Length: 130
Image 1 (cartoon, rainbow, N blue to C red):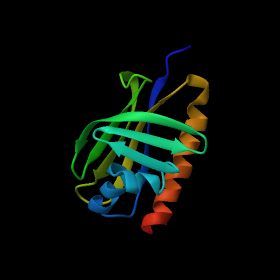
Image 2 (cartoon, one colour):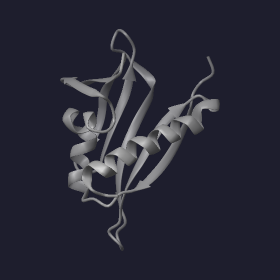
Image 3 (cartoon, rainbow, N blue to C red):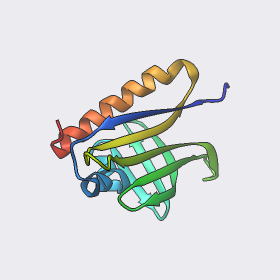
């Protein structure tokens, strides 16, 4: 299998960083827009979509700013892949945006970006940032 490639996309979001952080860092917040259900046990989060589930470890977080989840294998060992959600605030305009860092196989990057666009659209509707 070819190694996945890293990509970044930035989404402007009309929200306070504090509110946005709740939606990207908690199981209840993530389950409202990112996955059908999200459970956590300690540092491990289980993301559930329809009939599939993926497990990730909360690798790092900076309150009000960013979270990074490392995907783990069946034995809960870190893989080389992760996704990161980073809240950016423009110092001059105070505009808020969400930077997504993720990985996908080369031929699936477009599809992966489209999926993020759909999920971020759901997030924007949720917090009234449409």
